[in-house]
Length: 110
Image 1: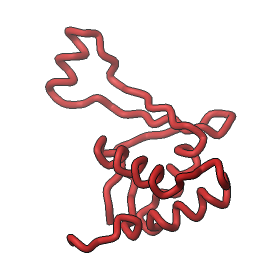
Image 2: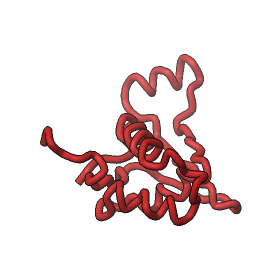
Image 3: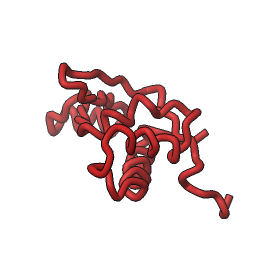
């Protein structure tokens, strides 16, 4: 897959992440902190059992569109239609956003 075009990849939301939408349409991801080290941190350092990640307007628009069928290019077209020039540099920002989501395990690729 060395010659893979990153923009042709199809991201899919991880099934273990709950999310909610507020009245303004902004999405909050609810990440359950599981595992041995998280339990220790919760007891010793009063870390919460659930972390909340608040997405901005563009992230909140993209998150529900990540379905494993749309490519990053498809997502970019939808973002451009919705946000216009405000989204520029579009594909650089979108690719970085998807990479961050992937690094945290929030998305994977089909």
